Length: 381
Image (cartoon, rainbow, N blue to C red; front, side):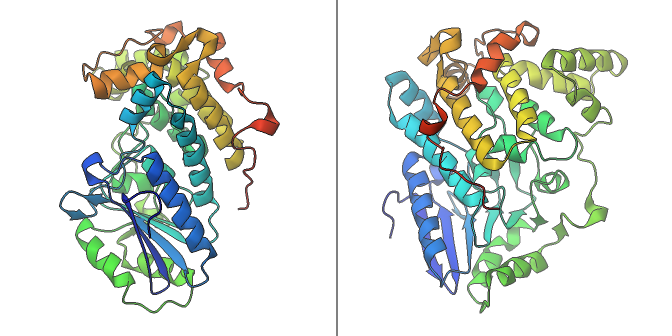
């Protein structure tokens, strides 16, 4: 039974708990009722001794699979921020609680990431027992394009990508196909999308002894695995200087290095990377860089508390005297989704104008530690 949202379909059969995100017209973008329903069902499955493992998928307009989740419902973010709707605070607190529940789940949790997997969809799919992708997978953390940062634990899982790939993915929003997501450690196994329905249905035909048997059976059906060393090829967007450039201390240093490389190799990787960086909020890009750097040495619970602080500052940027429509986040959503003019009025407009005084207050918690909305989170694994 669904207590909060019909956009999440759940069932229990043969030792497995099944979850389907069922809001296809919105590409399964997460609403607060969906977050609450997922939390409720996952806790029920965790307490049910008959459930050995949990699997989750998305849906599309024609049937199962085809889209996992396009992240959070950013139209709702925009409307709630402008109207002063207090439920916006609840959304992020409860979503990050859900992310923590998934990362620390004590039963195998398996995601089938077919189609689009961005933002909040990544929060439902990282830090788990098995992450399944296909040739149709389109994975990204593109939040800086709307004046936000890669949240839902992005400071944790992106910072643990090889080398300084995490900084690159956070700052450029680079799209990853299924095999590319394996290569950077954001997926575990690859299957052909045409096999997904039979694979999902095949789970119901087995007799499972424990949750690890479910994981091993799905691995056996896959054609590529992260542990297959011969598969670790470089993605087509990778460049020999990616690590050296994206390990530099600041965004301005990165831009200077990219300009230098561009002068040597015109219209290549440096040109495309500069273009991507220039499209995004300079301020939130600088915040995202600091987030990834800090997250690299933090535990998951610490990262989620940091991100809860950050998202509060995104909608209440008091140290810059901005709220509502004046914030980078509301302006970014307006330009990309509401008005669709793709002409965001970033403040400041250029990466070179960013100062530490603009960035560091984002990392000062607006709550005392004993009152932090995520103060109870603990890392059990």
